[in-house]
Length: 493
Image (cartoon, rainbow, N blue to C red; front, side, top):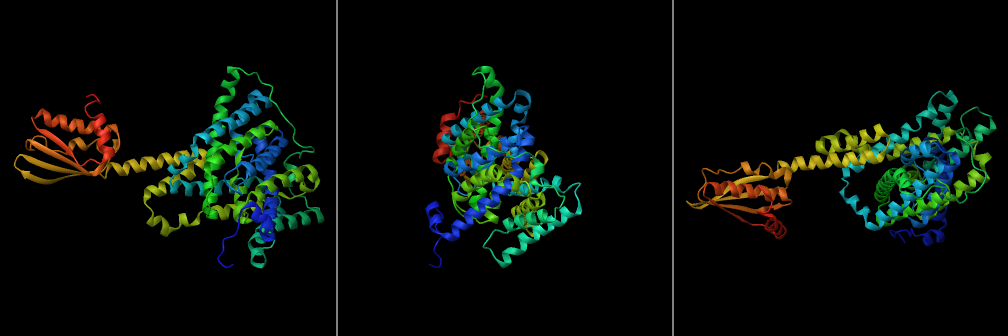
């Protein structure tokens, strides 16, 4: 019926031919885009391309069942590759797998402990910076494929972009990126064009993944070696995955279980490690292809992305190897354009937006692009946002002389949130010498948030007492009264 919301469950998709077609084709497009990325990340990590490809397969299939965000794609990623590269280089493959397994266990533990709830502390400006930095990184990742190549490559990229932009105006029955990939591949093979192909990126596997149990001693020394890398991998992977899940929530106007996503990522990494993969996390670019470009919304597309990937690289490796990189570059360029929040950099938006918010967004983008690590950018963005908040809060506290009930009494009203940044100079706002014998400080319009504020109120009381005057503090709300009553007079000099 008109206005009825589409059933986006797995069973609902299986009952809807239209929805199922979208999910299947979305998974196929993602699988094609995963191949060169997984190979590239394998090279970054210093492992055989098969290790990255198998990781992408096992991560996608596992998270389809375990994850909390339907339609999100998890696979081998650049951020994880950068973290684990030193382990491979210095200690070898067995220690890498041990690191992946330990990182997965840490993620499961953090997920069970509710680390996903920390997402509420990430401001919108950081999220905008995260999205914009992601778009820039996706675009920058395509530059090596556009450097030192013939004009034919540029023409093919332009043709691919034109197909992706124009085809939806004619029909949306088949995803435009898939059409672009197929058409450019046919042209490359038919005319025997000498252009870079997927096969040039590395060897594709010819067999299924198998069990891989790391041969490392179960000692404290081993834990000291892999522990720091496992913790870093767990935190980076969780942060990228949870940020991506939040982004997909916004794009699809749906909610997801962040706690399930957290422990699901850990479980998927454990499965991946056992099968000899390099581990991974949510892939933002491929997720945007699946959700935004292809319109997928269910776990079916995620599962099929993994299955198609395995079939393509193992069963149809010779065919996949002929796909021109120009076709995949065109897809990723359009993903970059579609991901960037263009509204955030419009002049009208920048004029209306507080400078502190713009600074947070720019800091997130700058650090992310400079380090090629989205986790670092988000952490710096949150820290800058916290500093900006504290800076604003420090200037919002006011002290007003509101009443003189009699010649021996003066009443001060304090307004604003009282925390360490805003209460430090509160002690200088009173006339200790000129005030009468009785001073009342009314905190009805403020709240006490920390011990620093209680210490400041103690200092004010002490200064008045030194001049033989008494201070009465009134108007505290329940939480402030409890905190003040518990700490006042017990914080030292």
